[in-house]
Length: 204
Image 1 (cartoon, rainbow, N blue to C red):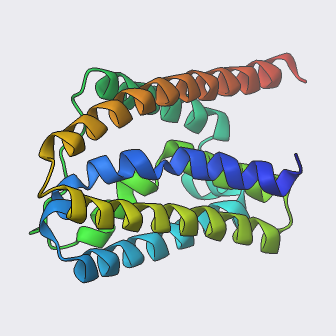
Image 2 (cartoon, rainbow, N blue to C red; image 1 turned 180 degrees about the horizontal axis):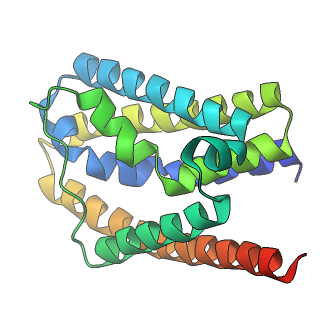
């Protein structure tokens, strides 16, 4: 598997449109398809800008702007991600988005799309690829996630009136499966951060 495919798949898996659709369930239920698509488009655009900055600047944005080491971000981000995974396994997700929120698109983008895992994946994409290809990989991952969420919205509108239980069951299964993945990735982030710190301390 080449670097482009690996970078694209890593970001797409971390975006996880299935669990994003669970977080946005209140919006999916209440907003008309056109309004939902517009808000999601804005959220994806905001997220692309953030990911592109991190892919372009790489670890320098942590060292020079935030004045923290990337390893610290990996460890803290892994802990946050681990908490999210545990909450998902226990079926206590973060508070759902509300249609009356003034900045719905921004609330979708952060923290649901832009998070510790997806930011680190963007940095990795920038390190593996030249900048134009990294931007394409990010755009492709976001684009496919966007399409998948819109498909879920359309299917939800068709199925909900007939079978509310099916929708509820989907959210339970998606939440638990994503919790397992989120927890596993969180541990990997923490371990990579610790490995980086140990290399620095040993002078490697």
